[in-house]
Image: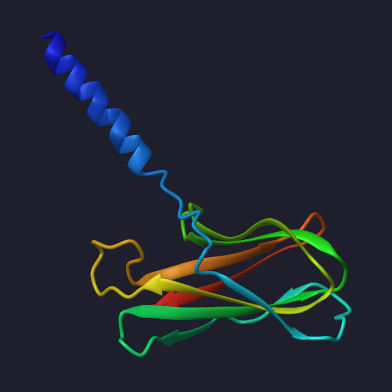
Length: 137
């Protein structure tokens, strides 16, 4: 009887861990300053999505307007509010216009890391929170 209880407990623990996995690897995230102009206010552009040449990944980009040196967060979440990946996590950027580029796996089923559907890209500072939604087909 004790062996069965132990197995069930381990299964429940593993199940809850799997539902909380967040992609914290930002090595494939590129942040590049695109303009020397200093914007007058914080803003996030529309999300631009393209397929890579091999048709295996989405290449996604968004532009950020930052009027002051700011510590910010930029993340991707699903429609239930679960954060899936941190693109920028408490990083300080100088004032300017920046382009952030990242990749997401291409998939046509619901059995993958990023299934087709609606996602949210959230840009957050200590003074500003803004979201843009985008869709993976």
